[in-house]
Amino acid sequence: MQIETMVRELWDRENIAKVPRAYSRGVDRRDWALVRACFAEDCYVDGSRASAPIDEYLAGLIPGVEYFPVTMHYMGNQMVDVDGDTGFVESYCVAFHWKSAEQPGGSHPGNLIVGVRYHDSMVRAGDRWVIARRRVDPDWRNGPYPDL
Image (cartoon, rainbow, N blue to C red):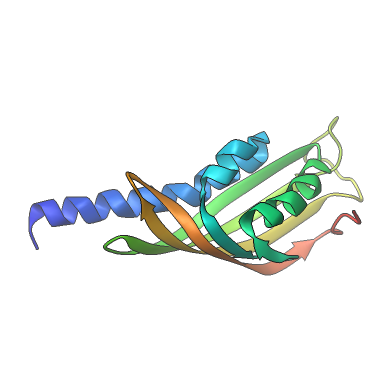
């Protein structure tokens, strides 16, 4: 394998891995433009609580996230594959949703902590990568989902 090919693959792998991390950052900062930019125009999401085209999915996700004054998504292990202009990344995530704005991290009956895995099929879009399809596997949960 030539050095240029190896560098290109490493560059692509890193940029693919950044997309779920940017998504998490956008969610936690309530930067919905950043969140939307992580997805292809025609992306479909098989979510943990709903499945829909991306814009419909986000329309349901946003009020659920904003129900909690503070969230923090911790991205853990990531497995990345790249094949030309397509790729795949599986990301482990622990998402903390704190109901108390006065004491985030403190005990509150409305807190929600979930462990999920994001399975993201990726495509190259010009000089960046975006999620073409996402499947969310909820592995575990501590606390109630909001009743919205």
